Image (cartoon, rainbow over all chains, first blue to last red; front, side, top):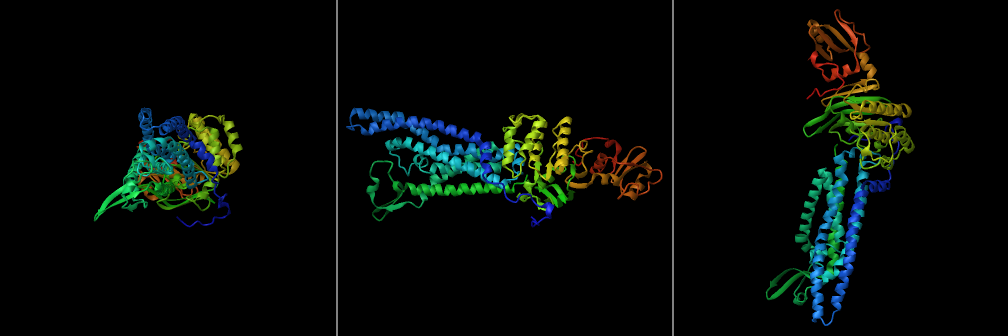
Length: 308
Length: 304
């Protein structure tokens, strides 16, 4: 590009200041309110179910834990009822929760840019005074923030709903994927990254449906990678020879044993204690946040350099 | 001041050159017609001018020297892409608000008044409007931005004759009232022949000729004479185009100045040229049989 030479008076641009960011609030809302309302409605409907079912689960579980004597027939009946009625329901909702981030990402991310490219409206949008870089940054940031907050709120409700089931089944809060991924800030971070993957692939592939399929593929690969490979390597593990740590019954606060080995006659364990739940959450959410920002930056770069 | 200036501008997609070595200057205050067959590079040139595409070679500047890729230039130009893309699920009123929010300058009152004049209901979704109404909405939005340069890519292609007339009337009014310069592309010359005071002819990705319409017409002559004499004359006058019929030949020549400057050779007759004839001659520069060149309003893709 040539050096911008200051033109003679008639050749000067009228406005030198860019169009303010806050104008994009209305623009983003108006153009994506269908998607935002749809997402909120689905989450709200599930939330109502979680609230009603959650009260039921909590009630049944407190009755079960309060039942004395524990080995009486009455308590056994309560136990079996909880096991038959609530565990399958909790398990089903739990599986849905593990897929929810990628579902949200697929239905929100790709359309933001791919729809403009599919319908040709980018030729309108990218020639307005605000400029395409501001337009893209503002849209993606606003949508990412709203979707992340919605996902976080939703995961808090699910965690409350799932608490008794986790307790009943003795699922470790650090070792169990179904538990760790759906509480704290992890669920929100995964949803954010799914949206960013979707937005970036929408710009790369330029068509909504193929971009949605690609989002699913990329997300699942990343999810498996973190679950099977990365999570064990977060710098939170402890080495010990204290066997008593691993003797008790399985509970939410059970440690996650990564591996065991023997030196001479001494047995060693490498494990992650349940107390390191938050450090693990921050590590995982941290790199997911960095990845999401990088993906959004890459998307903006793609928009900027795209040749029509 | 030149509203558009290109220097050795080129754009390639892979190995295909959509536009090559185009050096051009369109002065201020004109309605410049960008004509050529489909695939001639008109849309490429327009996309380069409004910053939607980045040049492979050369430069393009707008409004007296501002780079087309600089974001600041978007405050002063408005672009209406081919097929007038609008958000089909938004109402006309929403499109007004949208465009207002995306720009510093937006004459809301003027846009509303113009839409009311045209009888286009604000509450209707743009997707439900006719093609002519969609084009008028897109043009209204573009003009309400109070641009100094309006770039219109094939705005007439999808319109019926009446809508074309209405559309051009709006453009001409804006030029008269606000001094907007216009670059308008079309593959149909007939609609522009009387209104375009500057013409740019593109063929096969190359600039064939560009200039003030009146000057170009004054500089060109159609010589008609015996076919037997055509080759000798062609060698002498370097015509733009030679057409041969049975006994007669037609030579379109550039006189390089005022018409009649060169004496008409004996046995030959000189006629003034029409714009359409002139444009077609530059699009078919080689010797051709006259049967292939009738009078037509659509420029077909002769280069493929």
